[in-house]
Length: 85
Image 1 (tube, rainbow, N blue to C red):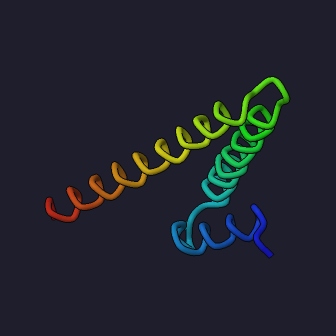
Image 2 (cartoon, rainbow, N blue to C red):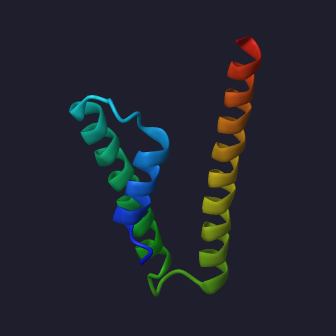
């Protein structure tokens, strides 16, 4: 099933070292779920009857753009770190 928990489990396995301190894992989990809650709050706002379909689409496109920028910036940062070492 495609759940926030399953996405967290995958993220944790992929990103967090197995020997990471419990507090690091807990804080990252808190941040991960807070991000998910933020997205749910935004989608709830978009589905408000006062928001036109066009405005909702524009808001969703803005979210997609924001995520794409984050991915691109993260990839660029990772490449820069690799070239420094």
